[in-house]
Each structure stands twice: as C-alpha cells, then as structure tokens.
Amino acid sequence: MVPEADFTSYYGRPIVKPAPWEHDIAIYLFTGGVAAGSSMLAAGADLTDRPALRRVGRLGSLVSLALSMGALVHDLGKPSRFINMLRVAKLTSPMSVGTWILALHGPFAAAASAAEVVGMLPARWQRGPLGILLVLGRPAGIVGALTAPPVAAYTAVLLADTATPAWHSAFRELPFVFCGSAAAASGGLGLLGTPVDQAGPARAFAVGGAAVELAAERRMEQSMGISAETLHQGTAGRWMRASIALTAAGAVGALAGRRSRALSMASGAALMAGSLCTRMGVFEAGIASAKDPKYTVVPQRERVDRGEQVRYQG
Image 1 (tube, rainbow, N blue to C red):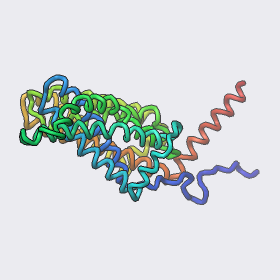
Image 2 (cartoon, helix red, strand yellow):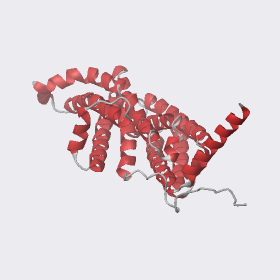
Image 3 (tube, rainbow, N blue to C red):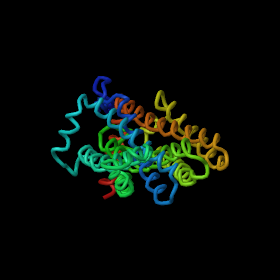
Image 4 (cartoon, rainbow, N blue to C red):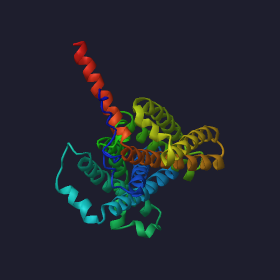
C-alpha cells in the first residue's frame, strides 16, 4: 500500500512570503512606543508640577516621533506615500487606522513639545506669536496623552494581522507586550534625564511596564504553539534573551535607585535598550517563521486534525 503523503512544503520553498520590511520597521515600532509613553508621562508631569520630567517627556516624544516618521518614510520610499494613505479611512485595515492614529496624535504632541522649546528661550522670544504656544502647551499635551495608548498598541495589531506565523499566533498577547515595553522604555527615558526628586512617576511607569512586558511575553510564548521556537533560535533568540536580561535588570535597578541619580540613569538606559531588543526580537522571529514552511504547515495540520475529531465525535 502507498503510505499517506506527508506534505511539508512545496519543494522546500516558503509557503508564506516574508514581509518585505527592513530593520527600519523595527526601529519604527520602538520609537513609536517611546513617543506614546513619553507623551503620557509629560502630561502627568505637567499636571503635577514636575517641570524637569515634563521637559524630558515632551522633548523625548518629539525626537521619538521624528525618528519614527523618518524610519517609516524611509521604508515606504518617499513621503508622498504616507500622505496618500490619508486619502481613505478603512476601519478593517490596521495600516489605515494606524496612519490616522499617528496623524491625530502627532500634531498635538508636536505642539506640546514646541511649547516646551519656547519656554526654554529667553523671555523676549516668548512674547508675540510664540507666546501662543505656551498657552496651548498644556491642552495640547493632554490631548496628546489621550491619543497615545493607541499609538503604542496599534503596531502590534498591524503585525498580528498578517499571515506571518509567529506574529499572527501572538495576536492575543502582542499588544500587551508592546504597550508594556513602551511604558518601560519611556519610563526609562524619564529616569535617564530627570533628577530623582521628580522621577517618581517615571520610575513607577518603568517598573510597571517592565512587569507587564515580561509577564505578557511569557504568556505569549505559551500560546504561540510551535512558532514560539522562533523566539529562542538564531538572531531572534539572541535579541529576546538580551531583552529579558536588560528589562529585568533595569526594573530592579529602578527600584533600588530611588536616591541614586547614577543608578537611575543606568537603569533607564537598560530599560530603553531592553525595549529595543524586544522589538528587534519579535521582528526577527516573524521573518524567520515565514521563511520556514514548518511554522505554516504544522499549525494548519493541527487545525485540520482537531476539526476531524470534532466531526467524528459529533
């Protein structure tokens, strides 16, 4: 008798085409999270009279947004392609929704950052048209903070909505990983640039974000099935191991550095580096899972077998 065929791939070729993205997109994922978290921290610092933390948050948000948009435009090839995406709004497309989220958040975050820059200028420059920005700084910062959480989360939805096995199988937990990572990174930025007497909210943000990120990563690995292997192998595995080590060390250092500026700065740098490693690891894991047919075929076969069992039992 002829044995039953065991299909694994089409002549060893990938079944799912890997995403045509370069590392620009991984940088975009990271800087977008830092920008979102920094906007939230800056608004809170403004309302609680912490000018140093407000300044770090607003300027950090501005720089991160600029880097994020630069990485996205570089990947798209030319700025007009981003503008053309605003010609339509498609609620079923994470890319379209994400574009509009950025278009809504960006101007308010930029206005709040501009107000901070004007406030650093000599008094004579703060009169006239530039003085209007000082008045608009707080309301713009609050709106920027309210629109920040979707900026941190939508990139995870964007990845999970693809057919890439490692990303799609993590659709439940990946938004929590990215949001926790964004909080850890932005809190780390606050620790890096703020004196310890004003860094309390940044410290809480960083430690809480790190805890959420590490717990969500653990849960994500348990739910991903066989594609979780990609998080432990090759380049992605090295990035993820570095992420866990840096994030855990940064959180412990943040708790221990309540009175030490040097330790707070070192912890903040570790948290930011850990967040970047998380984005790079998830990105590399997705690309690796698309290149290996096993991560497409095995889950499909498991779903077929479960369906057959259900029909037989019925």
